Length: 165
Ligand SMILES: CC(C)(COP(=O)(O)OP(=O)(O)OC[C@H]1O[C@@H](n2cnc3c(N)ncnc32)[C@H](O)[C@@H]1OP(=O)(O)O)[C@@H](O)C(=O)NCCC(=O)NCCS
Image 1 (cartoon, rainbow, N blue to C red):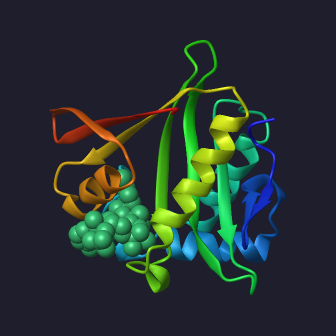
Image 2: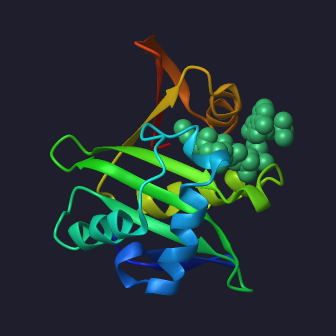
């Protein structure tokens, strides 16, 4: 199952629907911090209750899967998601952010490799697409660095694709 939590190398990828309220509070704080939200499509500071409602909806929405990633010391490293997943076309759009306290140390690269290896091995999807805000040059560079190919740019977004090897 694509949304099943998993453990790989020294990282735990835990589905949002299995996390405690305290863990969600920490995720929400990072998600609405300026360093993260300025690069998201929704750049608003939304209330914690909205975050919890969103997690509640994830329980019945099979087209969206969100994982929080923790290291062996249970530090929250970042969030990786697939949304939406198109099962018929075997493609999913993905999202990633690394907790600002852990950015720029190679963790985005390490975690995305673990994540793609795991997801592609499930044989459910064969292609991952990414949409990056055009001004987010760090993320564009990051996506190229982890093997995405630039497709096109439109209306302030850059579209990229990574195919199963
Ligand atoms: C983009 C992001 C996921 C990258 O994760 P990270 O752990 O910081 O990145 P890494 O340390 O693995 O860096 C890998 C490569 O990405 C690129 N990169 C990462 N941060 C960069 C920065 N600030 N400026 C330019 N390039 C950058 C570089 O090519 C880097 O390789 P290099 O160190 O050999 O030059 C992370 O910085 C982040 O969460 N940013 C804020 C939220 C965001 O933009 N998410 C993506 C939305 S589409």
